[in-house]
Length: 57
Image 1 (spheres, rainbow, N blue to C red):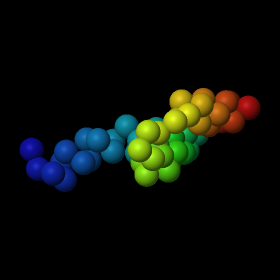
Image 2: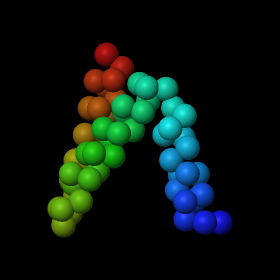
Image 3: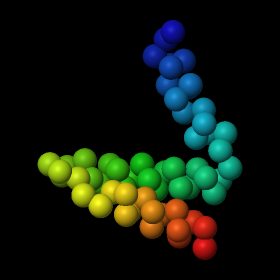
């Protein structure tokens, strides 16, 4: 399996998701990236919960 095919398999659920779900996924990924610099990331679960609650309302 080539790297490109593997990447397409990974991206497929995001690409085929409805716009609302794609926005949640992108916001969660960004929240996780924002925590990468921390030695001990904290409150990521709270951030994810907040993102989901905002999307539902």
